[in-house]
Figure 1: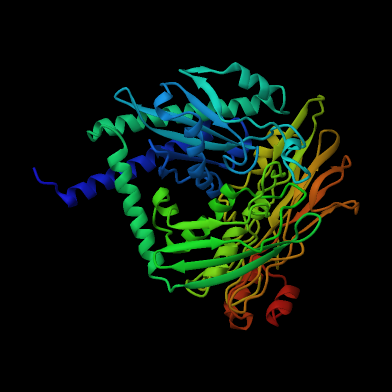
Figure 2: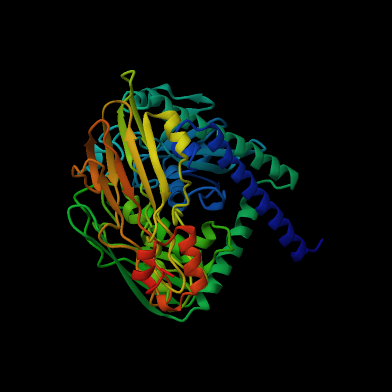
Length: 547
């Protein structure tokens, strides 16, 4: 019987889409069963399927690039420690090692083998951000990773369905929110098991003995499509750099993006050396967000897998802030990692249409304290500034690009910890001026209602270096952090807020696109009526607004 290429292609497409659906259901299972608000409310997670060689075949739609693209590199480390043929049904592997997984201790990756017809044929994995790992807490204050919390090396979290009590006991003895952390790991194992069963069922439905033929077809087609799009771009070296506020000194990120034929290299040589504080990035996380920046504009319609990642090489000098070496502190690595897509997009601007810079990193204060009943609490809230404007439209307001995490609802915060959100609204005049306006940031006011002071671990940037406009557009408004009392507070590090005092966060806006003088007057009027612009802001940015 001769093969029918068209039929094979349709069959592969059907399996591919079904796999993505299974993994999306896995991600939603994590959200429905998670204990921590970081996963349950904000979707700070990833889910993916890997073949027997550890290559990512498909991923869920829900999730963050920093998790899933780093997980694409992490599973190979798990297989080197525990080869697939040595695993049994009911086994589950886990680790939060920053250099093997997604860059800091708060992210746990759980990997489970997929068995089909009594043979291991692949793996499903997920990564979730847990609310606490002990140590100094989620923040940039650490000088070594040892200070930042407990590190669990790649281990068997479960053996043939029996959870390892010793691992859970170690975690319970070292974290502030043991029920949430242990509950999230159980959620991760449940999500993986459900996905593994459904993958086996799908293979049976389509008469597949294993994943290899389907995985090869998906990865090959994806790689060829990405290589074709790279090859269509002009060869050359394209440069960009971004300065950020940093901690104890500014940080400079430099990039040379080289295109040669069907391959692309992102070289971060010349970037600042590793910081003495916990804002450093491991190479896994640098790769995850840098490649995501490319795929945003080059391959937005191609599902991410090993084939879309492999044509793009990422280089960063060992010991730099983008390739920090153990035991560097890395807890707040997102502060730098989230700026990498804008760095990449700026380099691609000469050859592809790209937006202006946005706020980039999320503002996620880590809050700790004591409840009125005397119990310790810890939580993290995720908040976004404005996205950059495009060549044909305004930037999105309060949008978490590139992380994709959802803003935590006020009600979820107030229902779980003694913190009152007094105000949360768009920040007028924060979007950069231009033919198209940058997205709005927001203003948030919060106050602790527990016993004693509220501890806030600040991880904020773009207070000195706002998002830059593009094509003549103006910069977004810089961010700010202050206390209602007027007492001093910094943009980074663990700080104590007196009882009753209020923290006020002014999140940065996105950059504008095109000369402000070319903005449509009706659009300016609409911004005034909508409260996006004040009359003073309109006069300053556009030379009018009071008529």
